[in-house]
Length: 120
Figure 1: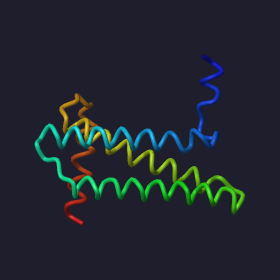
Figure 2: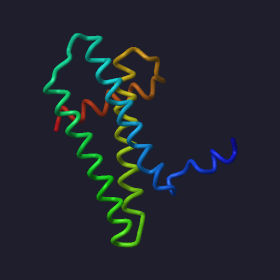
Figure 3: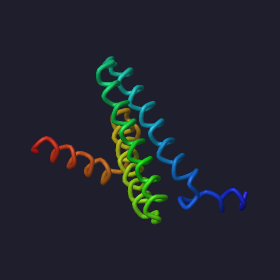
Figure 4: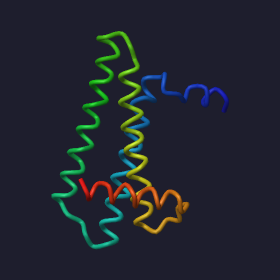
């Protein structure tokens, strides 16, 4: 078990790709289930969402190219961390909409962020 845990870190390129990909898949599944539960499944919204996921994958590929072209991996790790952060926030939002119990401070933060987006 310790050997497996030693291999799970972002310095391994495979995990740097799989972690955001796994979070994207979970986000798509929870988003689709949320839409299905609320009878709001829309092919246009799904196309838009999947288009954004493809763009995120392109960002990751650009980060990997920067790693080998420039010789520094900080750009790649920043992009991967940002994509993972976006996906985690989206997962929390989807879980909140599905009625999954979340801490009050998380719900408050999500609602504040949504209000900021509406004003802009």
